[in-house]
Every structure is written in structure tokens, then in C-alpha cells.
Image (cartoon, rainbow, N blue to C red; front, side, top):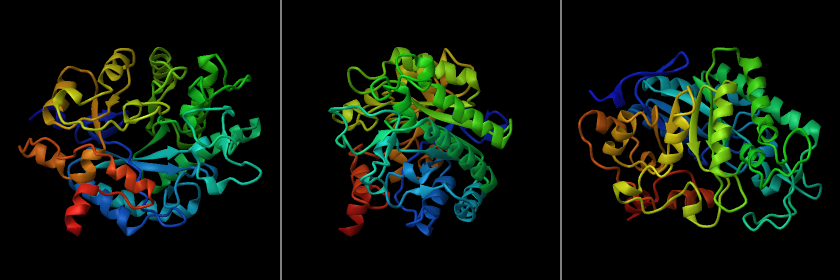
Length: 376
């Protein structure tokens, strides 16, 4: 059997194969952010479909970091009973599950702001052409920075109590941790930012320390890290690679390598379109390959992987330890089981991004192409 289907470990956590379902928001929680039957079906299908490790969609750790009305929450103990049901269902399907801990920063839901501009960011960026909500957010105070660090740690403790096998910090795609890391959005002149990369990484490291203090030394703590922004003047890969190495050395147990702040158009984001040939797959492959050489912890490669042959090539060449996928599994949650059983067809996802458009319109996650055929 291919090494893709051999068990592999992150710290002491054994995962049945090298396939990861990359975190994908589902817009299917209830109004309070609690687990619903719709979410249970999504995650049960993924577990039954053969994935080794499922990483949940963006799960907010503090109300100020919420990005959509029906986003999953881990911001209070009230969420724990529903999350326990979710982890139990995934474990019954043979998969492991990590919760992605999330804060939107300046991209938070507008209705959580107001005249006092409570939407929080590392700093205010005047005249930002890549962000349409100038004037609706403000820089955090020192006390607010520490409050959010504490919120991440408390959320990790709830995750542990709810039966999650690990947590992953969302440090990519222009949300709070990305905003701290990027020199474009972190203009602070204190210990939390500015020109110094180490200062811009301090928030990440303090969050890690708080989590580790609360969950103990053996619980896996992962991070999805954006290592380059999608426009000039943002985070460059040279610093992103240094950041990945520093975070691995600080104790994070695995890295998933992705995009940082989004630029203009799909090509300057993590949402590339028309991934219809093998040469367009694994578009973060070079970043991940370079970082893999610099760190001693497991590395996950994400970004447009659609075919079994590409996944196998990545692992056989030692370019990553895990293959991470998102959009193909929205359409085909059983894809990995098909591959394991010998049906090595290419994923039928056409990379149209209409699943994302549905989420933006407030609809639950599903493949828009499949949904259209059902209605027809």
C-alpha cells in the first residue's frame, strides 16, 4: 500500500493516513455558534470518507473575532456539549479532528462594531487599497492584546475538554495572526510589531505559551501560517520562511503552509481558480518544500491538490508530511476512501469558487455545482 495510507504521528497523536481536510468554514452553526445537525452530517461524511485528520472550519475564540453570523464558536463553555457530539461522531468514523482557533481581527463582522469602533486589529492602516472597510476598526490596546491571548488559551482548553485531538491556530489569509505578522498591517511601534519580525511574531508565541500552560505539554498545537502576502509591500516569503522556522522552534507541533493577506483577484489569494491540469496543482508547493527543509516538525502542503499522483509525488519526495485538501472534499467527501480502494480518479472539483460565493451570501457550505444539479 502507498505510504499515503500508512499511519503517521503528530507528537503522540496517531493519524490513520497522510490526508488532511484543511479547515473550511461551513456557515452552518446556529445563531449562537453551537453545533447543528447540518454540521454533524458534514463532519460525519468526511470521517466516513477516509480522511486521516479533519480540521474544522474557522471557530471564533472571542465574540469580537466573529466573521459571519452562523460561524462556529468555542468562545464559551456553552459550546462544549455540542462539540463533544461532533468529536464523538468523527472518532466513530475512524478520523482524528482538530479545531481551528480563529479571530478575524479587522475583518470581523461589521455588526459587532459600532460608533466606538470595537473591531480590533494590530494597528490601523490608512488608505489600504486591499481592504474596503477603512475607518471601521482600530488598533488594540495592550490590555486587549493580552485579553485575546487569554481567549485563545481558554478556547484550547475547551477544545481539549470537548474531545478534540488537537488545535490549529489560524495564522493565514489576512485574519488576526496574519495581521500581526505582516509588516503592511502591523505598524505598531511597541513590543508587538513594527519593522522587527521577532516583535511581529510575539503575539503568535504568547498565544502558544498560554495554550501550552492551559492544556499541558502533550496536547498537539498546530498552526496554519500565511508565508507571503498577495501584493507588494506585504509579507515577503523570505520573512515568511523565517517565521515558519521560528514558530517550529518555539514548540508548534505541525505547520500548514498557506497564503497571507489577500491581494486583488483569485491569483493573489488562496482561492486559485481553474485548477484543471496537473501543472496547476499544489500551487504552494515551492513554499512548502523550502520550509520543510528548515524545520523538524511535520509540514502540511495545501493549495489546489486534485489528483492522487500529485499527492503521492509530494509525499514520496519528502516535500511534506501531509497532503491537505479543502474544495475537492466539499464535492466528494469520500474521495480519499475511493483512492484507498483503488479508484484513483482525479477530483471532480472544478475550482469555480462558487462554494465560497455561497458562504459570502450566508448559505451553508456545499458544492454549488452539485446543488445546482439537485435543483434541476
